[in-house]
Length: 369
Image (cartoon, rainbow, N blue to C red; front, side, top):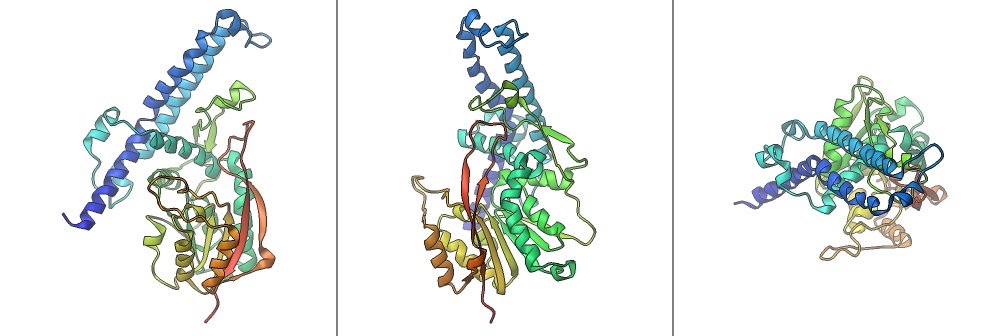
């Protein structure tokens, strides 16, 4: 067996596990929901104390709420089924899915972290493609888009300008850039994101035509029971683009896919650089692929994804050190543009707790020859 064949088989196995996790969502969440029935261990009188004005039975209150969650779990599963079928059409380079996955997904148990990624994907849909996520998008997308507008103020100035968005997620930022008239490509490594973005970008027929329930999965920090049950309709804008637009999504590791020097006019990154095992590798790659005079526009925190993970390399630099590394490659930081933005990421807008990042925005320019 050749090394390339081995890598291909590993990728195919990873793809199958992602599909399986999507298909097992309802099974695992229903089992989780059964555990929440310990509410019934409270006596009837205690349950009745949960009732508000006009509500007579605490038992019926809890039963009704759990049943509502179960129904919405089923709705989420129906959407996930449409995302993963037909498997063969998702990515041409993937071999046919193992029948053990397609015919009997319950026989292959999805790991806890795999199911967490499925739930995170549902929340990511709300962030990128629903009106609920608009405030979050404005916090971190607008500074990037406004910088592009300032540099390329007219449609004519944007024509043919190639903009790359690594860590593209579900493709909203790259799509927004394409809508402005740039040649735009998003790059994403996660199969969870790629499978879902494929469905949203290529199969959406109606504005707000699909509804999911991304906030079912936690009973914590809720003001009201109905906040847990709220639906999220998407896409808030149809992802179709005018004729002549140039928009694409690429799959794969950023460092492996983008190796050709001097090919991109702009690299735009949002909440991306801290996903690296070694952020210096990302900086070197960005410097390499930018044309002379090209621009890197970044916003995000430094919540290094591989930190504290056993067996994983993680180089964790301060922001000051990152700036020094950028300058060491000859790039120039436009200090007057540097700014800190408060950003919320992937939050429940009705939650009593949201994490706010102090996200650093900067613009770095590769010197002209």
